[in-house]
Amino acid sequence: MSTIFKQIIDKKIETNLIYEDKLCLAFNDKNPIAPIHILIVPKKEIPTINDLTEEDKNLIGHLIFTAKNIAKEKNIEETGYRLFFNCNEDGGQTIFHIHLHLVGGKKL
Ligand code: AMP
Image (cartoon, rainbow, N blue to C red; front, top):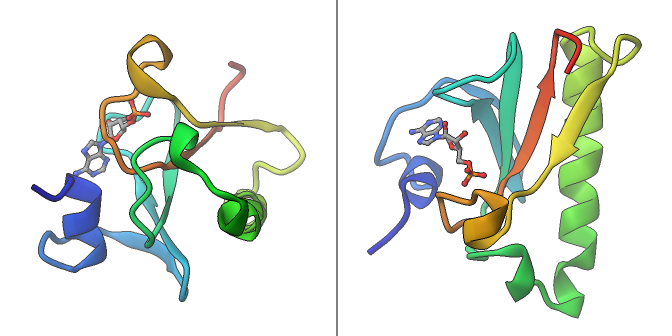
């Protein structure tokens, strides 16, 4: 059973894409915790951060680099923002397809 993010990647579910390239896409979180709350999601299916392999190192760098570019586009680069991955139950992960949260637009 594919995750909701895989369905978004496969365009089976519509979402307002903020960014897309060969490796990842980005869209607004549907339950934002701040004025800006964007998810950067790799197209490769990786359930949790624990499942990363050596070959995913560049991909993770790409997600962070993409978040940095989006933060600039959204004019929060100077005011600041938070980037995080949740992992498993205690980390608060609810969707088991890794995703980088980009949160800003207010003092956290
Ligand atoms: P996490 O708790 O790290 O697994 O984050 C999952 C995030 O995905 C939550 O912040 C949800 O609000 C968000 N989310 C769940 N379904 C969707 C969706 N269809 N479109 C956008 N964001 C979603």
